[in-house]
Length: 408
Image 1 (cartoon, helix red, strand yellow):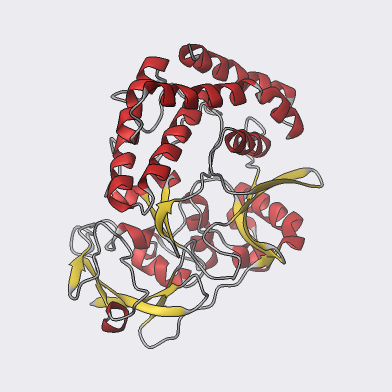
Image 2 (cartoon, rainbow, N blue to C red):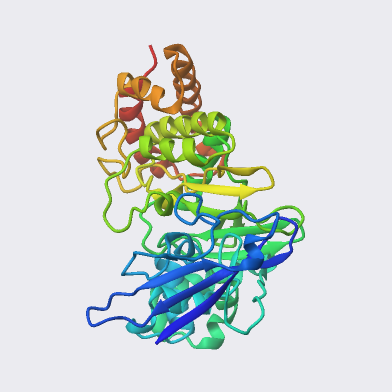
């Protein structure tokens, strides 16, 4: 049997238009999925149309094979789905067995609750609406998330009703929810019962340091909810008018499924081919790479970098998920130069040419700026109420990294 889903797109104006159709066959004897996507004629004739994946889904008639037997759909569509935390929530909400947790089925259930501008509906049905939970319920959401993380099977559906409604299509394994207020839409990030450090306050501090270092970051605010804390991250896929900006991850653009071996140079190459403002984006990516090295953000995987499409075209999205080295890992996920280990200053400066920075002094100026900001981290840690023992623990790692990369 071939299962089909219509794909809709919310424009920055808030208007919803049909873009195309996903068709996925039932799994074969080995469990592999064969799927295709095709743009509908109306979208191809739409003056505001743009390719949903600028590298792998050009605006042409005909079907494009997904060539992803585990997922059955192109990566840009799987980008709509959550990773570990959100998928566990979906599996619990809809009582899904293992065989029902394949990507096409999850997309049908996701409907309009995903991050980004894409919505999914069965053929013959209208585009789904996207709802949200008010920020007034953050304390209750944090409580439900904590209970769900500790004992999901022990909770009744009515106990999880609000968490189900808030949902979460963001990546990662940590508890989170999508919420709204009169000023906009947010991703609420809660503490995990498995945390050894106060990760919420550490992420708030890292995001503030990144802003001070000149990196375009998502807006954040740190809230106290009784005994719990929460980081609100302003959603950049939703604009002030209530419309949507389409997103695609660097993982999808690089077709890097499963275990991959990629580096910051690969991201720079994508930007050269895709971005409407490549010079701006290349320099921003370089600055973020330097920051990630100094702060110890070793969880710099490809899902944490996106290209965003708005009225101006494609550009690198604001930075998000910036966290110091809470796992005390020895290597970054992405290579810096030819190595995943923390680089020295010479390597950082030599890499600049791959980001369109030709003069050594320009690269050095960026490194100096980032270094000076991270060197003042204690004041930011204090402002974000990072526990002293946590600040000391991550501070040791940061000092070691900064010693290797100290500007001349």
